[in-house]
Image 1 (cartoon, rainbow, N blue to C red):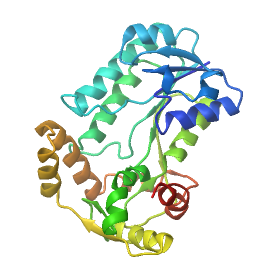
Image 2 (tube, rainbow, N blue to C red):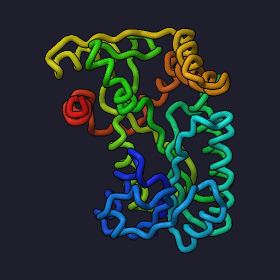
Image 3 (cartoon, helix red, strand yellow):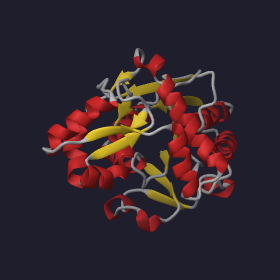
Image 4 (cartoon, rainbow, N blue to C red):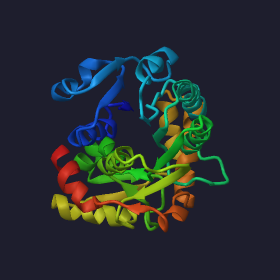
Length: 289
């Protein structure tokens, strides 16, 4: 049996379908079972609650061969580091209690980065804590999610632009969430692997944001440009929206690390996935617009 956390998220819901398609026995941990798609709900065991709760994990993990772990975002958390570690400590202790043999978690590319990297550093701290459980462990380690661009649909539609904080002429490693789910599914359907390591997974392109704007222009049939936002400008915007200083620092440290090349060292050793930016635009972004 495989236990899956966050089964209604962009990665988790795809992962569950991969596992069910392979006739796997799946148990899910979900805050609200009503959010599960009806056909999935009929095929899985359900434990309702949050996976930072030891009692919920104790209900989910008996008999589990493997656990899929993803920390859900929480904008109200005091800091990304505290948020990730609270989940990871609960998870590691439960894995030890129930002698779960394998854990697959969603982390980030860039392990070994020597500077603070905000949310990415929090993911690396999660990995360390979960490895202490003693389980065989794989940290699926993607770079920038293409789905982050879906938050800018209005700007693309109304102003013909999208914004990031990274240089427009430098390649940005990206990946589609469906490919992250597929990588996790591959690991969970063949548990012959042992030991503990990170597994970088990258999309096939080495596009710059300017390249991405050109692809969007071609796919939409109208001009789209990339507009770089300074870190100071981003921080001011987030503070004006009510974000705490700590949350602003978590985000700006992450974006600074991306701009400085936190993902670059992993490019050479990453598993290259199937979905390119143009395909993702055609199949995901354009229909959403």
